[in-house]
Image: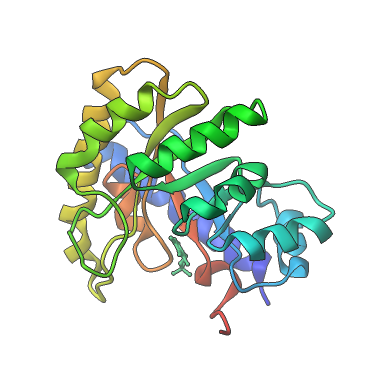
Length: 233
Ligand SMILES: *Cc1c(COP(=O)(O)O)cnc(C)c1O
């Protein structure tokens, strides 16, 4: 596995995309955070990634992440990128620094309740299904502000931005309008200046489409295959 080489190449691509975002799209983008997606990969792989400079990892299943966290020796930031059911909230809040997949009022309220008990302020993103795909989780564009207002009243939750999983297109240009719409939603949310929020992250872009996502204003990309190769299921 060529984790270090892959990471070097990806960082190069990220930097090129940042330049294009700034020069072509006039988006003020300083830096992009890389979350290495380690689902279906072993703890050893995570250790290698950390050694190669990865500071944040993304996992989409609670139990898998908890199991890994017990044997992992290195320090890393944990980001939940998969769907979260209300009955798993206690475990999720105990481990994750960021929960990217909040997609309902009920889930946000449960996260707040559990976080309060352990005196934590849980950072979250709202997951948006911009393309309104039946197969994807997430709220629609028009639900962004109403849900953000509810979350802004929850003391032990801090809304930090938006996340989306774009539809897969071989031709990533087709994804561009979706990313553009996400950026508009993100800026609208930022400008709303809701109390108790810190709108900082726009999480979009995976192995297939991260360059286009960054060009359209993403500042957090979630990359698995591009770093670790194909996952075995
Ligand atoms: C698996 C996954 C990724 C990473 O996908 P790759 O195509 O392997 O880069 C990113 N985001 C989410 C939500 C995922 O489930």
